[in-house]
Length: 355
Ligand code: SF4
Image 1 (cartoon, rainbow, N blue to C red):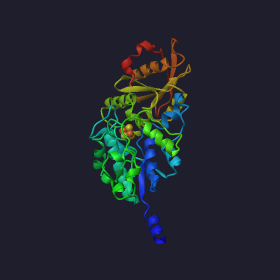
Image 2 (image 1 turned 180 degrees about the vertical axis):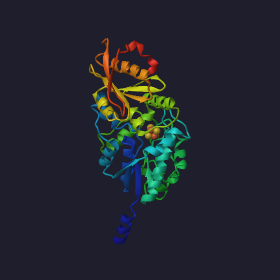
Image 3 (image 1 turned 45 degrees about the horizontal axis):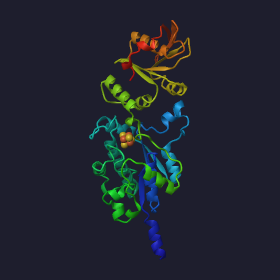
Image 4 (image 1 turned 90 degrees about the vertical axis):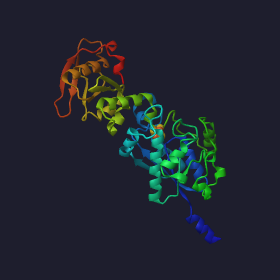
């Protein structure tokens, strides 16, 4: 009897759960923990994650908690979380998605395949037994359809090691179910877009607070953000980006008067403070004679372009109705200088310039 207990303890199975910070992955991990499996979490950082960033900067989001939701979920579950930076490797997923994009620039199917594949490698390297995701059949149009869910398992190489506890009963049995590491009967058959079953399960588990992402888990599902990303690629003549680009696409008004440059104009104090951190990397300007926003200039503007950029920047300051406004220009490696401009009236800034 005693020996059996020792064997049971040494044979506790170990699973790694992909934790996005949302409710579904939280419930999926919990459902498996409830069955006595040791669970740890992985959160992949692509740079496009919504959680935390804009909420921490923008005034309109001030009521939202400034926290990393994946860490918060791990803390609620009482599990260890491994945050893995995949910024560089993710570029290829976003730039060349084999299965294409969703409604916006979200390459969800390739993204899922990539993340599950990374988790599979992690499982092998760390002596874990299987992978958990919070996917629900029919919940998302691209990566969580009946036809695409097997593609994720297959192309990631995870195959039978991939368990989706929230809809496991709608799918063929996986290795953890076949081997009896988890009891399939205690897993779920959620499907469709309704959130009610998840909310009921959250209540059952005693989770009173959880994040409710309105769209997907990243900025790539956002129409405006996607437009700015495409504009950046078009202007540069190549599909490439750095983390700084990804971050700056999240803040400010983006105004492109010409192909060779655009302005990023801060909309509020929080954004201006955030953008201050980029002053050494970009030409930047602000009104010297009146209160006004900081503007970063991305690209290669001529002197004439800087004059136009100054007129636009002046439009967003308190000198917008003045005859003349003084603009300070700072270019990396050069002395700060001032130019005088006439603010451009709003009706002379064509709509097409707003990215
Ligand atoms: S919403 Fe973003 S992070 Fe989530 S699967 Fe789609 S591309 Fe990946």
